[in-house]
Structure formats: structure tokens, C-alpha cells
Length: 129
Image (cartoon, rainbow, N blue to C red; front, side, top):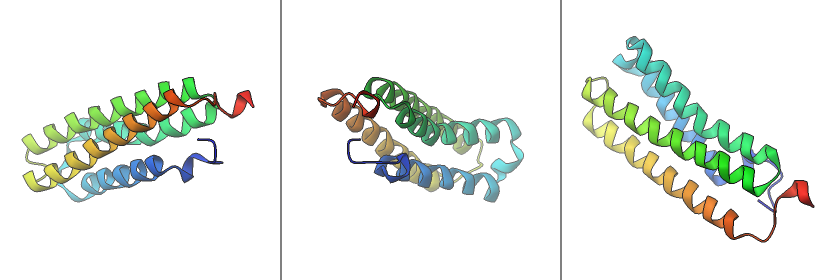
């Protein structure tokens, strides 16, 4: 976090944005578009991944950032669950489910590694400088 001026520069944020865009693509291009409750849930949870990264970054302290990255990781797990429901309801193919589930797993791993990095950092965050 020390050399990043904006959350938009973080690789994990870029990946979260790409993942959210992929979820939006299935919302508008598959039968999921007519499953209103699930559509809104998966749209919200996938957006929450990137939103929590942004909010945590904006807090200016590593402890708060770690907490919001944890929220982001939880939202990613929630999105995985909703993807499984979309597959089970035949809104998306098994292949598409597998691809998006793998992207979610990679994002969870990336968030976890970033949290561990921040936990070990001697810098407390820009609001403490």
C-alpha cells in the first residue's frame, strides 16, 4: 500500500473489477437475467468485492484495510455460492461455472495474501504518516 496512491492501481482491485464485469456479463446474457432475486444478489455481492477494497483503502490504516479486505473475501465466497445456484438452476453452463469459480478462488487467494502482507508490514498506513 505504501507506493499506491489510489485503490484503482492495486492489482487485486483490477482483478475484482474484471470479475465483477464477468458476473454482469452472465446477468445480461443468460437466463439468470430473469431470476430477479438471484440476479440482484450476485450483482450486489460481486460489486461488494471491489467496493470493500476501495473503502478499506480509503480508510488510510492497515488494520481497517485488512478488515475491509476480509469483507471483500467474504463477498467473493458469497458470489461463489450464488454461482453454484446459477449453475444448479441451469442459468449457466458447467464450463462457465467452473471458469468463474476458479477466478473467484484466485481472487480469494490474492485477497488473503494481500491481507497477510499488510499484517506483516511495519507501516501502519498513510493516515499515521
